[in-house]
Length: 598
Image (cartoon, rainbow, N blue to C red; front, side, top):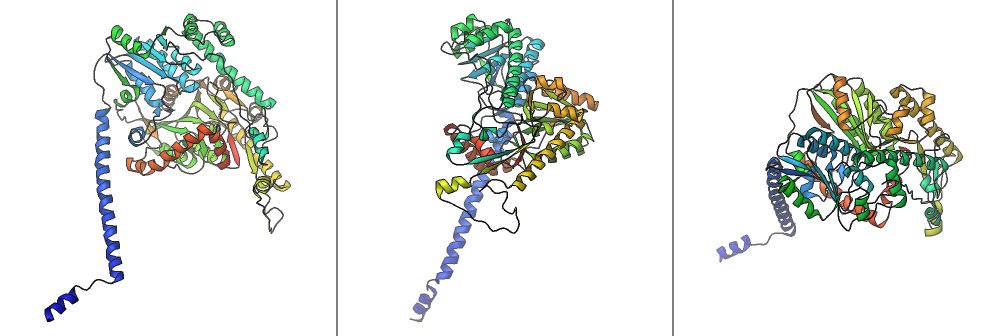
């Protein structure tokens, strides 16, 4: 009996709190074990993937055609692409990869030729097309290997790039979009009026060309804006026509006649007008490659470029990529933007690195926040004091994108680059009427001073607040002009005469002193090497790529955000533009608007 009582006592159930504690500890331990196992599996997977990248990117075989798939998005730098491609829907490729692939094929006996594939439409901008086109011309002159182009439908920018090919192939049911350049600007004023939302635009008195913000305060192009848009689309078109005429053995007059009358758009007409050479399905291309060049294998340009590992040299040129809208702070995940703190840090690090003998700042930006621009401009000036600094402009280097460029030792741009836009503005939305009239929401105020609530979105700016902001933009515009004058060794009054927010193409900018020479990244690197007095060097990219585990931690959130933005953009044209203005700093040095001049 005593033993049974003792056994019963020993079997007494645990109390509530002991049970809870045990359960909690069990759950935590199980959670840790499961996650540890998951981390180990992912680490082994990623380590295997990373270690296998070299072998997976190796290229074997002979009589290869290297395929430049122009349907993929193009970013300036390809770093992080390998990791991202495993776990993201991103299909972007780097301009650096494309240029490297073209360069390496020149002397590679395994390569029979290049294949330009446009599918249902390419993604290269005019300036990117120009840079690739010049590289392809150099490729043909250097090795004489063939270039074959194919598209279901050629856009004008696609056709411009394809025009250097030895054989331009179009789908029999396809078309050529050859009609000249036009710019169509979307205005939101009437829409905002329906919702009782007003936008107050403040810019220097002289900045009539600084038309950013006019899309919210007007419903048509201003005279100054129409003038500058007409000037730069005409500049781009004239350059494109001249270059295409040479490549296709036509005259600019003939090409303009085709565009005026839409007489080369249909497939048969495009052949008869010599814009394309052959109408055929894509299988014809692969059959032709096999028959004419005994080629049975094609390799992607990105994979081909990645198969060549650059050898580190004692002397280096640092390439710093500034791509996207200019914004303050540090980068967050994989968003493409020019973060002021990141670029400034990269410039300082490159300037202090003894192995770096020169710096190339690659700019592809419409501009953006003034504060971020000022931080980067100061860093450019610090770096320039220590070693040669050359700017290479891509598609855009305007407004804040030009400010960070103007103090370089040399500025290189493409003829079709959009640059200038030296000016500033501030925009303030007023939503008080919308909230009151549409939603029945009102506000009331208690102030300690006359202007305590003079800069709120609920009502128009107070006279004092507006005068303050007007003074602010006027003073920054003067600073901007002085900075350009010093960097470009020009008179301030002259800079003011060509500034005032006006946009220029690279071909126009070189005539007025805003750009030094025309060319791409290779031209900029050559100039930087010459200024540094070096000939044997390697290129190192800045900002440094994130560690793979940092990228993975940030990837999910950013990928999901990118997918959501892409869906919204399809439903609401101009969504990204609207979102930018809704979240931007009040004072901006930025290109007037996003504009497609294809």
